[in-house]
Length: 109
Length: 193
Image (tube, rainbow over all chains, first blue to last red; front, side, top):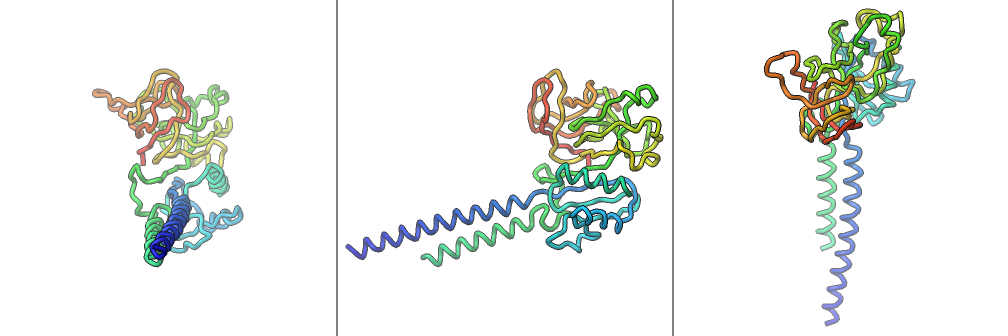
């Protein structure tokens, strides 16, 4: 009888621990998903000097790679030069402040 | 038993992490497709010119406000300049402006975008993805209606294809929200890029 009671207590403890772990797991998954927002594409219909752009972005605190393969943990996006236009692919959704910054940099080129 | 539960939870963590790593924005962003389910937007840097470029109107034209629906300017003819219209279902529909764009500097505006690089009348046009528009001051629009320009400058209406006029075929996307008169920040999905 006592052994049976102890067995039930063990199960309750395991169940409570499992519930805690599942809750922690859900929180972690939600945190991962919040980082997993959409990338955006900014099309600029004129030519540019990529290295100058990269420097200007860096001065404003944004790491713009000149190739998608250059990406590291600090990358904000990368530039694709298509000759008569260029595209900036960001690694997360851009906000209005970032759009204003890109406009300012491009207009200064 | 504890070990089994712990292993299951660890497997769940790893599975969810792997899923997150292959999602948009974390990895293969070039090949993420363009489905309405993708949180993905396309913006273009464009130049704004008011519809009538005579000097008198130029100097009094107002700024282009955020959430305005605009068309490509057929006078500048450069694929970079946008303007407003009062034509419903205009086939030249370009997209939705995401932030205020100022009017051109009076007296310094060239004919095409090349003449006006670096001027103040440049801003961002959204051509693809989830966005918001200002609706017409009259009428209602149902959810899932097609999106188009309207007879009111900068305001969006619903689209019904003309069976006779090829100039009136401008479908810009669809509404994710229904709205009644003068809806603001009406959610839409643009499909122009």
